[in-house]
Amino acid sequence: MEIHIVTQGETIYSIANEYGTSPQRLIVDNGLTGLNNLLIGQSLIILRPSVTHTVTQGESIYSIAALYEIDPIRLILNNPTLIFNTNIIPGEILTIEFDNQTNRNIETYGYIYPFINRDLLELQAAYCTRMAVFSYGFTQSGELIPINDNSVLSSLERWQTQPIMLLSSITEEGTFQNEKATVLFNNIEVQNNVIANMLGVMREKGYIGVDLDFEYIDPADRDAYVAFVENVTTVMNQNGYSVNVDLAPKNSDNQRGTLYEGHDYAALGSAANTVLLMTYEWGYTYGPPMAVAPINKVREVVEYGVSKIDNTKIYMGIPNYGYDWLLPYVQGDSKARSIGNEEAIRIAQRYGAVINFDEVAATPFFNYLDESGREHEVWFEDVRSIIAKYDLIDEFQLLGGGYWNLMRSFIQNWSYVNSQYRIAKV
Image (cartoon, rainbow, N blue to C red; front, side):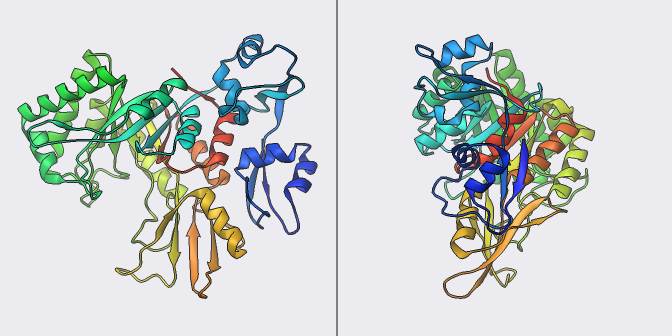
């Protein structure tokens, strides 16, 4: 595996020829379908197969996988065009293994909404160990507010991706309702009703665990939240289910702010089976232009996290998005637009931007002028920023990466993760 940074005059064909790979493989591995030209500063992942197989008459995905003693899903992921069509033809060359692939199993945890595009769901589920469906709510009496998740769950089953039920106090407007959460944390009758109702749904629909996403908790409820998580975990574990808790990106015990004060890392890490560190949103909708997940800031959270929680229980958060800011930024007035990472490349192409890379944040960015002559600044993720994040996951031997969220395509990410690790499946 190599990373190539595009320079003036290079094309998909010239780069493919330089590395002895096919233009089609370069396009597929980097999500370049539909791009008319490459951009100066754009990063490309170059995958080098170490073992290949030429298909002969009568062979199938399953017979070839058995021949090399690998899982059929792994064979499909190594040849991603097979995700949507597993028909193979004699003479076709399939990748069995990549150069420098580690034997380390890693978990990939993704968050989705039930209205996700079906083709995108198939793609994302193929590469995920677990996926949490956002989000079941609850009433003041402890009844669940359901979501339409049946079609999503059938796709996850196909890819042996573990479905996770997500419980949250978020409202339809997208804000967290503290008052409702307070009732849940402090009223054991409501609490037990919620847990019993979750068990019923999980048994009915085949969920294997629950994700608890409670943010902006009243600091006065800090200990009550821990007790609630302990209650949920005890009941769920007794019934064969797991519990994950999402944690605000803290870097100290005494970090101030409503996002942080309600989350006790040590206590919640002990109470739950796993945790997700929400290591993103330094660059955010109403803030100034900057990286969403600068690696130096992410490191601070991880270092604090592993000092309080068993490292093998931790998923490190990875943002699957970026932001487009209109300049000049005006505090209290400016509002950035959320964009996908592949969308960022298309914006740069449309306006002829040059991609830059911030070495401290380990994150790409660019500026451009729109049709009205207004300047914009865009920060997003590419394969280089993903490598930096997985290097941190490896350094601290964390459980894996947790993606918020997988409602947008990011092929480069999966090309890297799949070629360098063995993505854990059921």
